Length: 185
Image 1 (cartoon, rainbow, N blue to C red):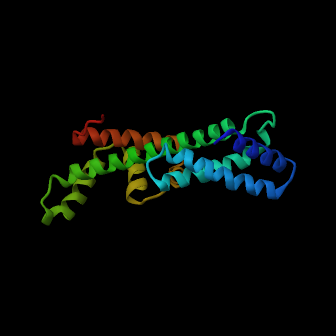
Image 2: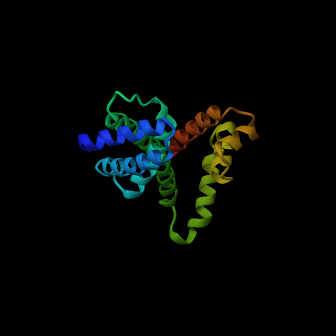
Image 3: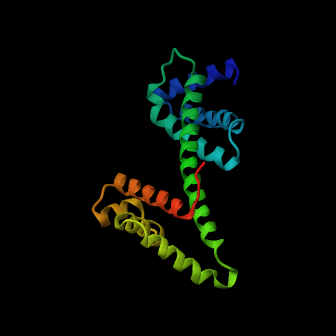
């Protein structure tokens, strides 16, 4: 973004802060283009770019009153969008970590059986592994993974805090990894 464009965006935002809806629409449209280019240089896929762009625009909308007219608008926009990108990657990493853990556990169990006996053997192995867990860990994992309840639902059902459910599940997953000989990197 060049200096003229940055000044134009700043003028639009100041007008929007004053209640000019048309200026705000123009500001958001142009900001979306600028941030999309910014994010494309830093992210892996167009889908990720669009997700972070939408989160960025929402954050800008919520924070528009914090923009100070005597300051450059570019760093303000890029800081907000950069923070949304960091938040996205943190969430992405947590989800990816859980999916990889699930895949590792599943492949470890699958590796013990031929295709013909896999269905019966897997179910039996899973049940045997779960039975080796302490009662609370077993119950939390059964509710989360087998009954596919949310953390909030498990929390309510077992009269535990959501944090306690997450910690208990984590400890159960760690125990299962140890049973299976899966080493985390």
